[in-house]
Length: 53
Image (cartoon, rainbow, N blue to C red; front, side):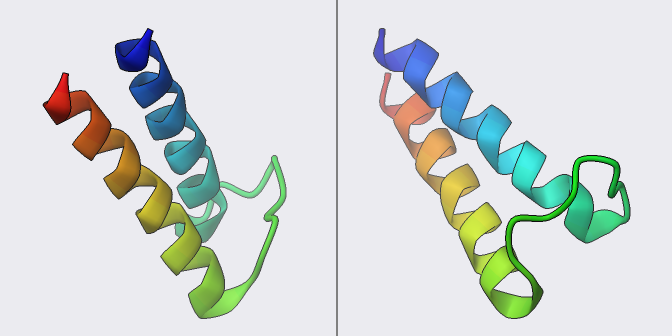
């Protein structure tokens, strides 16, 4: 179950990064530096959980 949660967190992180790199069909939840910090933070959490398991 934890591995599934890690993959879901990584998917959310990727979805948060897509508007920041120019794919804006889904819209963006935040703007500027906060958006980058949020997306990268989610990706780091997901990767760390995946490495743990």
